[in-house]
Length: 406
Image 1 (tube, rainbow, N blue to C red):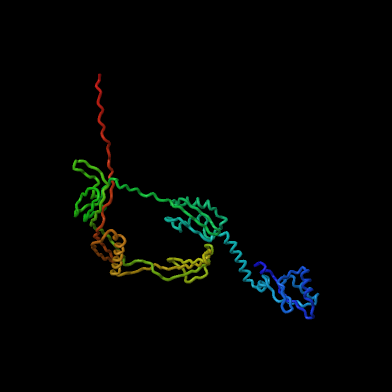
Image 2 (tube, one colour):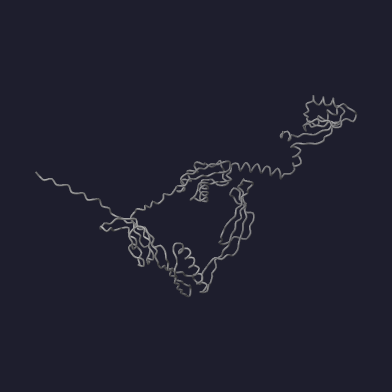
């Protein structure tokens, strides 16, 4: 039904001004090879449609019966497109669409990765590119099974790779190698020794024998909780020492800031805009000039229509230009920078399970720099496990009785 509506057809109206007989004309029309349909009578006039190629025959037949034939309308795909035959943009766009469909049918337009946890998506995309799989590559040139073997051989953290494609979409599933967990036996004999020179402040012993008392000072490597336990019967046995040892110790750090230094400052911005087609970028706009060193980041917005993502995207590239200059500071400015570094050191290295209870700051100024020495008084965990390599000897066997000689 829909195909018939696309056929070219011409509407007609036949009537008589001299009282000619339309019945004879209709009989002649039915016996003729002219294809017609939709005949209706309205006010002594015959209306209907014929194939556009048969309209001239219809006029001659009506003339033979002294009838007047008039064209009323024309329908069909030919008459719809007839008015656009000189509009070359539409033709070019249609041809371009056909070319794009042909190209995209054999190109990778999307890569989906699943199953990865430790291996990042960027690393996997790099491995895929090394095997010839990337957005814009030809699907007919890709050997999926060979690519799977190559990727497994290139990364020691990947145990298995499965690659398949659905149309222009490539799906990559991976299975990572599970690392072997460290086996820590809780019954392995060990001591708890001091990790640094400190003063014992608090001890909680869960297993083992405490050697120093609270308030005693110990040196790095001294045994605090022993895994060798003596009994009242004069025998010893080995245990896995466990406990919590809180100690107070001092940590010394030195920070220096020169008065004359070089640093990078922000000098301006530059922007480039490009269209990315199958991974190839075509720059169409530049704002500013990229020179020297810079910090870079980009924004990419892929073309989407509904749920379909096309391999075409708009890329905005941002450049933050920097320049190296010589900076001269006063001693107070340099000292404030040292204070900031001290604060950052405390936040990064002396936080969490440890507490800074006191700090001694000594400042020393020279012609070229300001040096600050800080002695931190820190309270925290100071114990660490140290295995005991015990030597076990078998039981002595009694000597066999000697036989007397005959």
